Image (cartoon, rainbow, N blue to C red; front, side, top):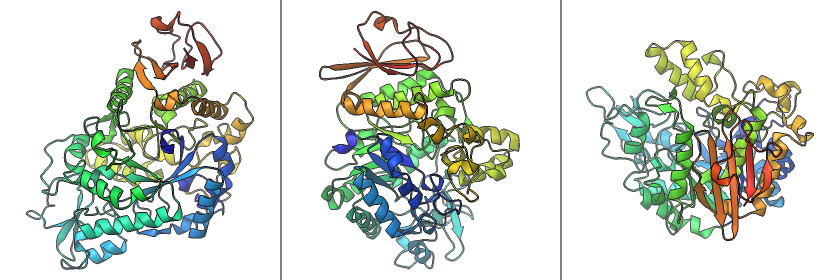
Amino acid sequence: MWWKESIVYQIYPRSFKDSNGDGIGDLRGVIEKLDYIKSLGVDAVWLNPIFKSPNDDGGYDISDYYTIQPEFGTMADFDELLAGLHKRDLKLILDLVLNHSSDEHEWFQQSRKSKTNPYRDYYFWKPGKDSNPPNNWPSFFGGSAWQYDETTDEYYLHLFSRKQPDLNWENPKLRNEVNQLMKFWLDKGVDGLRLDVISAISKRTDFPDTDTPDFNETIRKFYSNGPRLREFIAESREKLWNHYNIVTVGEGPGITPQNALDYLDEKQGLNMIFHFGHMFMDQGPGGRFDPKPWTMQEFKQVFKTWNETFATRGWGSVFLGNHDFPRMLSRWGSDKQYRDESAKLLLTLLLTMRGTPFIYMGDEIGMTNTVLNAVAESKDIETLTGWEVAHKQGMTEAQFLKAANYAGRDNARTPMQWNKGPQAGFTTGDPWMMVNKNHAWLNVDDQENNSSSILNYLRSLTTLRKANPVFSYGSYQELESNSNLFAYYRQWQQEKMLIVLNFSDEVTNLPHEVQGLSKVKLIGNYSESDQLNPWEAAVYKV
């Protein structure tokens, strides 16, 4: 199972590297940086969607699954990228969006023409109720999840933007089309599929009203984990995935410790999932733009719960940030005073935890959140529609920006910071999105030449993980410790490791039960001392 021992590097192509000066990252830009990617010690690259799209939601609205987004390049560029990865013993995981398409996809263009069109049932169409939508379901992006279409006097379902109509997996013809498009990419030699919002492909098709104001609860009860979910996944596995040596990674809100193993049946399920236990814990009932405080105790509990879930079967991923969340350093660490220390601590957590680690581009150098000074600066539909809703509810722009600058997706999508030059070396043109101003002192070039940089610390960590299978397969046991100290054992066969992480600005003591323990320090972000410094991380062989 190559994917169990792999470390994955995630690339948001639009923001990674622009090769032709149009301000938009592209496939040739990724090709330029293949040796850099290899140098990180990773085994696979996950590319966010690269398919033709009107780009209403960052490429997650696909209008043609068989064509490369023209801004990103051509199929020849893709073939060269795949060959370049394989030449360096790197795998490629493609991001496929199969819960919904773009409203500009040919299927939907046909579907909306008439109630008798052969493509009508590729989507969910319903008559309204008393001049209102069919039910009260809210969209992830604010407002109703139903859009009225006057051509046939009916509404179509879109859990995300109105330009992202949900595909109807109840229709066997649609499922056959989906399997065909996956086969096209697998036949090209792609090594894995990251399946976006796979938890929502089976819905409550009786479409009852939601009975809770808590949005995350609505997701769990009505949008995800539907009655035919296991059947749909098993069908793709049997007809398609089993014929290739690939990994399938399911992503989806609504996946819980209670239902996770439903997705991961060894013979009929996915190979791995992303769960969101920690990613939603600082969201209030209103979702992303309703932030609430989180505690270290809750954070540690998420890892404990999920390690227990996968103790004997199933497989999970480990991640602290991606394209859909703020920068991990700004969210979980200390992005000012202890920036270097806390970035290294978070990377230590990622690479010593059980499961397959996913590192988001830029986190290897400690990139931080950006600052929007006006909502109009946002490039993200979720922020723009979120502001519309918040404004109607009486929130001021300053209040909303505070939430958006904490939790918004723009934070993770600023261009990669390659050097201190104009536009951070990302492009020679005008970038599609503002480059973070701190690129003047926070960039790859400066860290390459600094042996104690975050970047070079990450390389040491990936080397350590590769040399010690205990980090991939070992059992997990958390030590009882004070609230800001996160300490745990990883044990496999005769090997035992102790990881100690001080999530605070305070000096603290090692857990009392390990103070006299015979141990050898393998790696850490401070030199040896009797106490734990602010944001200190240390890995010991016991």
